[in-house]
Length: 142
Image 1 (tube, helix red, strand yellow):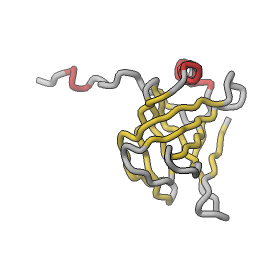
Image 2 (cartoon, rainbow, N blue to C red):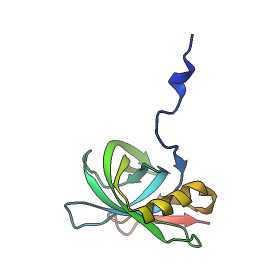
Image 3 (tube, rainbow, N blue to C red):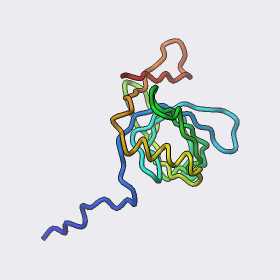
Image 4 (cartoon, rainbow, N blue to C red):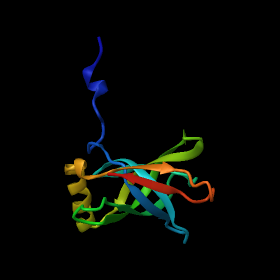
């Protein structure tokens, strides 16, 4: 017989689908890269980006909130737990599972408020920029 406990979510915090632009840099590097959140929880993020990075890298992240939200962004430090190659709209990119390893209480409260009311966020999507292969444009729909 099927064990119903096998199908239960094993995560400590539930994930909420939020599609928001973010910028990050690898802790030891000066360059800043764009990306997009796919979902979020109190303990981490699922993101997509064109930047290839190794698992266990630490990232300084800044997620932008939609216009009209009480705060403009939240910041933290996260570690890449897993990665996967993904393709969308003819582009090859990467998905990363991030675990927060440092986030201030103030930024945690900003994130929690967003997770408690995900309807306040707008959808964003990655689109290509025909003029430059190295630039990521994030289109936000309201």
